[in-house]
Each structure stands twice: as C-alpha cells, then as structure tokens.
Image (cartoon, rainbow, N blue to C red; front, side, top):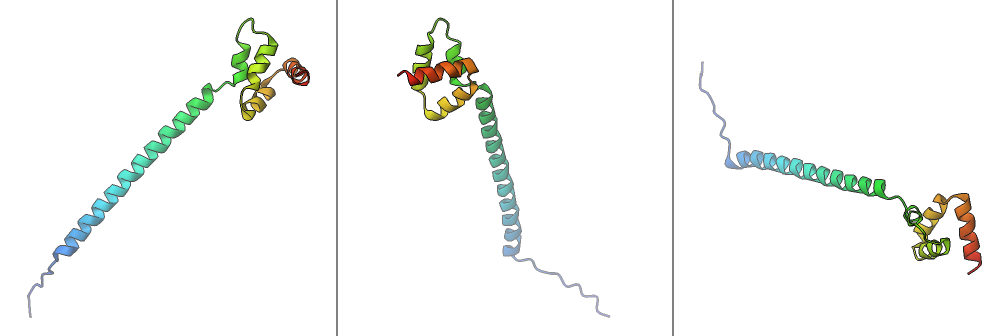
Length: 105
C-alpha cells in the first residue's frame, strides 16, 4: 500500500489569474455603480427641470399691465416649439386674441 500524497503545485500564473479576475470583477462592479449613479443623477435633474418648466405663456401672463399686443409680440420671438406648446396652454379667449393679432400684422 502506497500512502504517498501527491501535492498539486499551483503555478504563479494561476494565482495571478484568479487575482486579476477578482480585480476585474471589482472594477466592473465599481464601473456599473458609478454609471448607475450618473444616470440616476441625470434623471433627477431632468425631472426637476421638467417639473419647474411652466411654459413661457404662463410667465408672460403673470406680468401685470402688459398689453396683449406686447405679450403676443414677445411670444412671437420665441422658437416654434415653445409657441406651439404655449398656444395649446392658452385659454379660448387668449387663442382668439392671438389669432386676431397674427392676422392683423
């Protein structure tokens, strides 16, 4: 009966390979965590921006003693997307005044 124990020699590359794999996994997890934080932060900023965006027309209407013609002229200076959004937010009376204003230019 032979009771010889054969020990397996682990070479240096195997040890380093396991360490490299572990480091690589840690790096990937850190990268994913940072990416998740960045995306979350960006989403929060977009949500805050969208929540406070009330539209220019609402702000223009809040200006006291401003004649409608001045309000409309100012609104005309805004870009097309803003005008479309603000036109939809106008009351029927405001839309009517806007149309008359546009037709009498």
